[in-house]
Length: 318
Ligand SMILES: Cc1cc2nc3c(=O)[nH]c(=O)nc-3n(C[C@H](O)[C@H](O)[C@H](O)COP(=O)(O)OP(=O)(O)OC[C@H]3O[C@@H](n4cnc5c(N)ncnc54)[C@H](O)[C@@H]3O)c2cc1C
Image: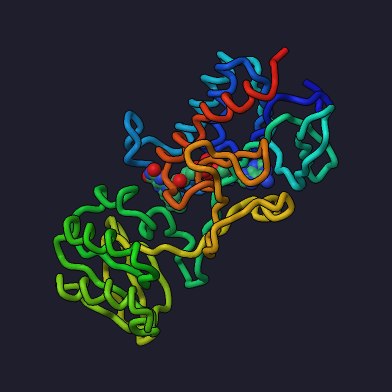
C-alpha cells in the first residue's frame, strides 16, 4: 500500500492495545496501517506479570511475538515504524475520514482512526530514580510485587485515595514492615490522603519525613537503598511510587479536539465499551482510553470488536 491509498483503519501505537486492535480488524479482512514510535510504557521492566500465559514474559518478547504472528498470517496489516506528528479529520467522498502524517511529510489516509498511543510517566529528578524505574522502583504491586515478596516495602508519597489498595497489599507482601517516605513534605493536607495515611499507620506503617538525596541498588542483593540528605540510608526490597503521567500523543489528542477526563493524566473519554470518542470514527484503546492502565485492559479495549462493527455499519470493504 502506498501512503496515498486510504486504508480502512489507521492505528497510532504498537503496544498491546494497538496490536490487539490490528489483529481484530485484520481478522475481518480490513486494511490497517499501524504506526509505532516504539516508546512503550513498560520498556524498562525486565518482565511483565499478571497476564495469563505470559506471566514473567519480557515485554519486548511479548510484543515482537505478537507482531510476528500477525505478519505471518494477516497480509492486510502494514506496520510503519514512525512517529505520527499530525492527525486531522478530512472528507473522503461523502464520509468523515482521517489523515495522519509524520515529520518527514509522509501522509496516510484512513476511514477510521484508533489512538492507542499509551502513557509517558514523568519521573522525578532524584538521582538514581530513572535507572531503577521498573525494577526497584515500581508503580504497581500487581505488576511487580509478588516477585519482591519479603523484606521492607517503601512508598514515595501517597497521592490519592487509590493508593490505599497498594498500601494494604504491601502488608501482605512485606515481611519486615512498610515505610511511607514524604521526602521532607510531611503528610499532605488533603483529607482523603490523610485518611490513607491514617489507615496505613493503624496497620503499622512507619512515616519517614527525611529528605531523599538519591537511590541506588543494594550491591549484590535484590533491593534498593534510599540515601537521605542527612547522610543516612535505608534498605528496601522495593519502592512504590506513582509519578504523574501524560498521554504520549497529547498533542494529537488536543489537535483533534478529543474530550478528556479532567485529571492530570487525562485519558480520552469514550462511549462505554465501544471505544468511540466525541469525534465520529475516532476510537481510543489501552492506556489512552482508561485509568485502568494494564496490559490485560489494553488488549481488551483494543480487541476492537466494536471498531469492526462500526466499520461494517458505515463502510463496505472492497
Ligand atoms: C514500569 C512499568 C511496568 C509495568 N508492568 C506491567 C505488568 O507487569 N503488567 C501489566 O499488566 N501492566 C504493566 N504496566 C502497564 C502497561 O505497560 C501498560 O498498561 C500497557 O503498556 C498499555 O498498553 P498501550 O498499548 O496502551 O500503550 P504502550 O504499551 O505504552 O504502547 C503505546 C505505543 O504507542 C506509541 N506512540 C505514542 N504516540 C505515538 C505517535 N504519535 N506515533 C506513533 N506511535 C506512537 C508509543 O511509542 C508506544 O510504542 C507497567 C507499566 C510500567 C510503567
